[in-house]
Image (cartoon, rainbow, N blue to C red; front, side, top):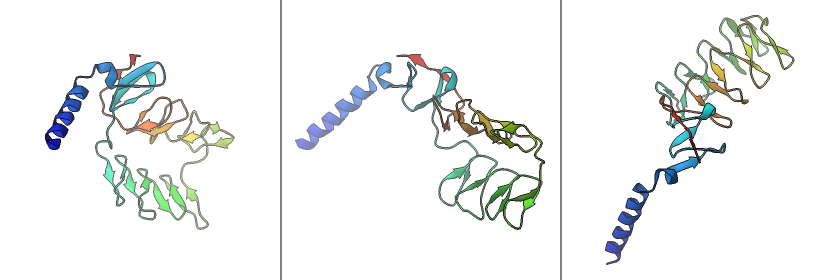
Length: 173
């Protein structure tokens, strides 16, 4: 009898959840808007369904992943190396450079880019909303202090999130 009652209650709760009004299945974005559960609140009043990883992600030995086009570090397993970068003992160096004997990088792009936060950027870099140098070939600036890979979207109010390509408008509370 208890099993029958438990089964009935589970079925009742499940039915209740499926018949909840759409607004009860929405999440507060924190900006006066809402978005469907399972979605992420994005900048510019949009939302999108969250995904575990972007299409074409590279699986790491740790079970995590790198963005498409990136690869796992051979020196620091579980870390990702941007496309075209080389690995050195203390990090990575940009394309066209080589590892320096005492650490760091030799050669590569000259420091002829803009001055951001008191530092001159490498050629081809731009100033980010953080006031730091950013490689626009690898990252995009959300304008809120977050720098996301091209595989991720800018989350509201800050951060990066992997979402499907389809966007929908947030709805008022």
